Image 1 (cartoon, rainbow, N blue to C red):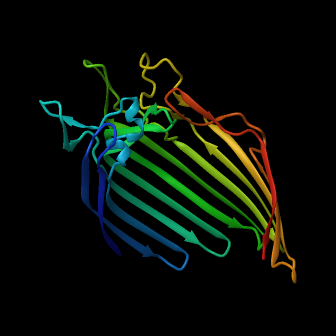
Image 2 (image 1 turned 120 degrees about the vertical axis):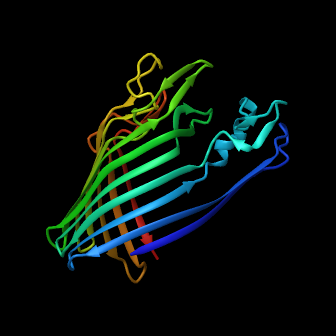
Image 3 (image 1 turned 90 degrees about the vertical axis):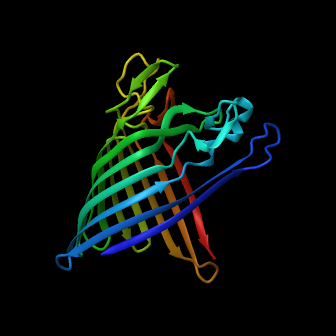
Amino acid sequence: MLAELQLAYHEYRIENEKYVGNNFSIDGLYLNPRLGLNYKFNKNLSSYFSFAHVTREPRLKNYYDVAESSGGEVPQFEVDESGNYDYSRPLVNPEVMNSLEIGTSYNSNKVSFNANLFYMMFNDEIVKSGQLDRFGQPVTGNMDRTIHVGLELSGTYKFNNYLDVSLNGTYSQNRITEGYYFEGENDVVDLNGNSISGFPDITANGILRFNYNGFFSQVWLKYVGDSYTDNFGDIKNITDYDNKVESYFVSNALISYKFDAKPFLHTVKIFFQVNNLFDNLYAAYGSGKEFFPAAERNITTGIKVEL
């Protein structure tokens, strides 16, 4: 049994801002408890259960993006009747998560396997809005209630002392359960049930490794499912752009050889790596109407010397 209590304190402060004159500080004290139970059936098989309550403070940029002040960005706090900011009432709240996890693992000389079920409930999760600032960084804000639920699987099989394969994958549902988009003063778009921006439902990886007498080679395969660039999901007539990053598959390969070079050097390692082996064209991620393509096939080679 594991019980843990973390005490976190955060403070942000803006003082004597030269041109605009904003001056404020905001702080918070948070208790983050965690409880875990582990049971070992035998030397190979075990299972666990855990519960965690975690609070995450927004970044200073969420309260006030100082770098954007010349572009009209203002502090994100409520304004009183006199038009002054009430720095005790920020518009962006801390993110609160309650997480439940249950899993099992099996380990032997040849095989290791892990399975994990998770259910995460968020209040005021800080998510990407689907917009970018002028520096190309995602604009984030609160979503009232969200849920992340899914299954994670991972395993490794050793064929012998030189060759092994590892696989891992995740299937998850990352959904808004209470959230709205305010378009103007009167139009409200209900986002309930939509996918959260930037979260694919399926991811998978596979790695095949060979290591023998200084020679090492590895092939890495990666699959990422569809994801949305904003929180509108399949709602029509909200945006004038395609808001989905299509699924993609990519593979990389690495070969290296390491040998002793005494008495002049300790060791020398020669390596050759190919990324995006099959030269696939795909978008690695997106935000709103902006899509960011991944690099085409590229090669890296070099020598690493240990003195």
